[in-house]
Length: 329
Image (cartoon, rainbow, N blue to C red):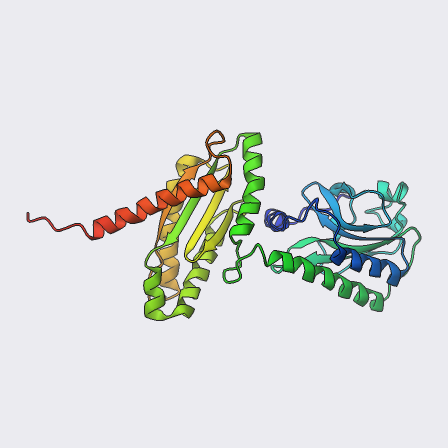
């Protein structure tokens, strides 16, 4: 048996999956409708909407099995999400990856498998719509087309969920997505005693950009800032646009005494990229940050409020310097 490989963008993939808040939720007719259609169209005993979590595959919709999850290391779908198109196994007993897999040698005795990857708007493979038979069978190009069409129906439902947790302009998480993702992260930090720091960003003179160059250019500045966050921060960090010109990032398992250095590096990189892009303005920001204290911060909201206050003080100090009267000396 060959366990599935881990995608190179696994951290980003898991973040998008967790942000959906779909794992371990109750069955929903909008997904069950598709698996029923797949089961009937292809005449198979098993049809699933399978989502690949960190160590398991979990079934959002399941017809023909008595379990709602299996280990990821023995999953067929863990292999399927690595494919550009459908993964088809005509006879698992003759495939070196699966012939001794317990899902083949034991119940449910898989012989035939076809799984079409389900992807997010950014292209991440979350799982599959798959059909399974206990007898080997062929699968035609027409069959592949029908399976892809059905998977497209599932993807549209997932995208509808994703649109509620993503910022439409910048394509990073919105407030709702950020609150969902950070809940998972802070639980891990509490349990493993990992450090975490929340940084609150507010763009300086953003209204002037809108007033001087127009709202289209203002949108460009917001997208530019979000893109630089994506480039500068680690794939394990969680960042979002909270709304307007406010952004936030949660850095976990990061040395807290390095935060100021990270922010300075981000400022330098942002200025450099603005020059390279020949923007008619510089994108500057005020910031505040707070280190996670499990005895003090019951939720991410507590950290947001504290970091927001620190950001305001940083912005106020800049204004005070600008309006400081000149000395007579």
